[in-house]
Image (cartoon, rainbow, N blue to C red; front, side, top):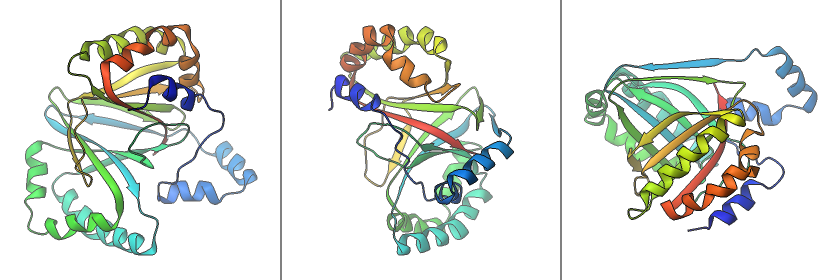
Length: 265
């Protein structure tokens, strides 16, 4: 595990690391000239996506790390045209993507995260048991270096809005069984400082079920924060409050990943 001090140094480095996600939106942004980007930004109105799920819906955060070969792109096209319609038949909904955009830290290095849902665990089970699915399930190994499905039942439902003019961070924590309360205290003591720096906690997933190509262990918590501007997370990490409590993140976890994200809606 990397120390919290090494995480802090990495997150505070200058510059922005834009990782391509293999989606057309991001590719278009990368190929545009500076003047085109400015013109596009001036013309585009902020977009938003409202995610409103009923009680007992299955919410999923999908971290993706695409292969970048012609063969992988061809396999992806087959998967999109064949497997996704089967999922949609069973109620699968894609709400939007949060693309990694900025200094981030973690052993898993995705290009981004998709936010998706199913009406219920039963709907997802019907999809998995569809006789057409196994063939396409194996195709995933030809498309992604790794893909991680974090799934969580929303017993009381979920109401969440994503905005294209906001910025987001995601922390994925594996808590230390002997000191898990330290991580809870760390987040609780940061809440006021997060608000002071223009952010707010918008979603926490506890003990999500994880399916991955790498057979990774399920984390204990996913925590999303929405920021009003691109520097909100940096201001938090520079604050006296953060410096006073960051040791609790170290003692309360055995592994901690952090991602800076921009929405693609």
